[in-house]
Every structure is written in structure tokens, then in C-alpha cells.
Image (cartoon, rainbow, N blue to C red; front, side, top):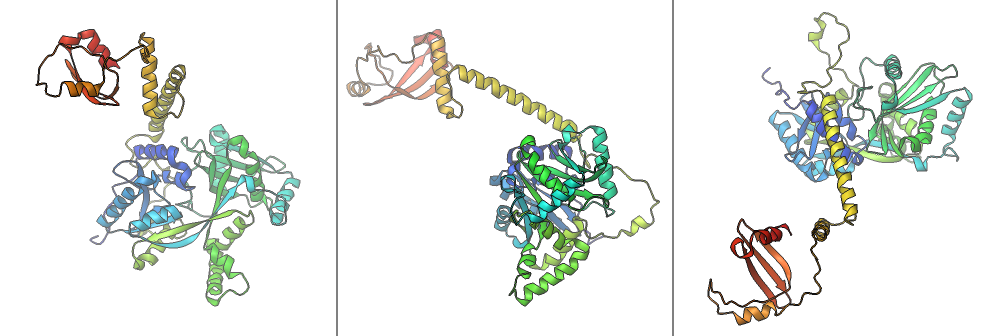
Length: 501
């Protein structure tokens, strides 16, 4: 009990999830794994500004963060520092799973070391073609499944009926070959949530209309997808996964998607380099060990299943603070990903119970569905206000993207004309210059009145507005002059008019 780490007090709440989704709306395109930060078994540490966050889970005394921080890259460092401080406070070993190169650099600046974990397969739809020798295996698989009478259906979750979603969830549970869901940094761990309406479901049906396989994708920004779930029936046709991927690419323009992230290949470089002629004994031995381990952990099969699509490979990194923590970090990573189960003796003495539905958000102060609805209502109201402002600007002759200072000046220009004021009084002729006034009255004492009246023209540089007094600095080519306008001298109407422009 004395050596047990402190309790985590940063469990994600409904408000946290909504804030994360707000950041994903703005910065979701940065990382294909960003949406998985909304998993509800994670905790979150926020940067002081609230513009970035690190999501993590504590296992075996290790604080395992997933992928890159969420939000504004300018605020990443602050979020990482607070997360590291929290880990040290609780005596947790900090670690990161699946950081991108940009994220690894940010964690590296905070003093963490990096180790390449593997590569993520990114498929750009514009480069995907079933023709050519290299795509022969995929082309043959797709043709074989099509000849068997299979059909595919690609839909956003928001377009599915409750019955269709229930059928997909039941099939996914039935086809799962483990007792628990696997995945942490690259899986969402839920399906059919009302907040995941932009997720995409790809289904494959046999000639009898029976559902045989499904792929579920989480959103990656506005135009991308990231593979979340891959399930198939044992009776499905060989090649059905390739068939569904090809149909998703074909449906891309209809659902507004042009790229996706496929499975993650652990130690891809070892598999690729170790199979080449002339590979050294070390890398050949490492590859043999990984092939042996693939009997239980699907390491080689994931690499081969991705390689056939000829994707772009993007490296991902494992981050750690101390070299001595690497074994501990590796075990903790295997636990959070669901590959290693920690026995819990206390569960042996508990009475068996039926399946327990997890709360919508553990420890949440309010339902994220309700909070998200409020956020979307506020966002819609702001968008409507922006459209109205844009319409008003169009009437005033303003141009979208114009600098703020110029927009303000043009708005004042329109307002002055509406009030019958000529903003460009070209008929006005000054009687003297500012330089001449300063020279003539250089020796004038304070509060001295001369009774002289002059007319000058210049640019208003400074304007200090008070209740009954206003002070303004006018500038032209010969110098500056300070003016004073008082309520007693100018009158209420003139003073109000001065303050307005």
C-alpha cells in the first residue's frame, strides 16, 4: 500500500471531451490519431492556456500518453511540461506511444528519449489504382470477391438507422477473437456513440445479403479517416478486406474523403530490411524473432496486409524519459493495447455478474452529448453571426480577408457617408501649416488665448477621448500639433460627433 502510486485525479470528464472536440475541429487534420484522444478510459492534462492537452492512461505505475498532444502546436510544450510534472508528482514513469515526428520533437525538447516503434500506412486516394503489376494481389482479391456476388456499402454513422447500427455492433462483438477490445493509441474502443456521427462504416454483404465483414473508421480532420475497427466473419470470402478498401476509395468523393490511415506496422523496417539479400546477422535474427512472436501478436501479418496497398509509410515513435524505464514502458504499452492482461486476484472472489455497461463518461459532471449539443448550438450561432456580418460587410464594399485596420476604416467611411459627412473634403483649403503655427507661437505661455483663427489639414495620429475633453494629435508634412476640444467651447453635438469618428 505504501509503494502504490497516487490516485489519478485527471480522469476525462464530459466537459473535457467537449473541449477536446473543439480543438479537434480546429487542429484535427494534424494527426491521424488525434480523434482517439476522445477515448473515455483516458485522463487529460491541459496546458494553462487551454489550447493544448495531453491524454494518457496510467498502467503499472506508468503514465502512457497516446500519440501527439491535441491542439495548437504553439501550446504543446506547456501541456507536455504539465503532464510530466503530474507524472513526477505521482511517481509515474512517463511514456508516449505512437508519437509522430513532429510530436516526438516536442516531447524530445522536454527531455524525453525516442525509439522508432514502427510505421503507419497512409493511403492517398489519388494514388490508389488497381491497375499495374504491383497491385496485382489487391486487384485479384477484389475481382474474386466481386465474382462471388459480394456488395459493399459505405456510410457515415449519422446516416445509419438504429437497427443498422445495432446489427453492425452485434456482428463486431460476435467476430471478435479476444475477450477484450484491443487498441489504445490507435483505436476508439466504442462504436455507435451519438457523438461519432462523422465516423464511417464500410460493410460487405454476400450474395444472400448477409453481413460478412465491416471496417469502421474514425474521422481524421475534415477529409481524412483513420482505421478504428476491422472485423470479418470466419465464413467470409478471402480478400473481403481489400474489396472494402477499394469500395471506400471509390466512395471517397461522395463522403468528402481523400486519404486514410490504415493499420500500424510495428518494426516495419526490420521486416523489410531483414528479408533482403545481404542483410546482416543482427537484423536477420531480429526479424526471425519478430516472425516467431507474430504467432501471438500479428506483427508480420499487419505489415503484409498494409504493404500490398503500396501506401506512404509514416514513422511513429515510442518516447521514454529514462533508458532504464524501457522494459517497464514496453510492458505497460502492451497492457494498455490489450495484448497482455494483468490478473486481478480480487476478481476471483467476486460473484459473477452480467455485462456491465460503461458510463457515458467516467466521473463526468455532465453528459458529453448535452455539452456537445450546447457547443454545437453556440458554434452555429457564431457562424450565423459571422454570415450576417459578412453580408453587412458586402453591403459596405468590404472584402473578405481584408486586414482588420482596413476593414474598420472602410466601415467608418460608409457610416460617415450615411450621416451626410464628406470623408474626403477636397474643397477644403488650409490657411496655414502646422510648422508655421508652431514657429509663430513658440513662446506662447500656458492658457494664453490669442484670438487668432486658422484652418489646418493633417492626419489624426492620436486621439484621447474623455468625458468633457478630447485631446488629438494632428500631423502633416511640417510637424505635429495637439488639439484640445472641450464641451464648453465645441458644444455637445460637435463633441459627440468628434467622438463618433
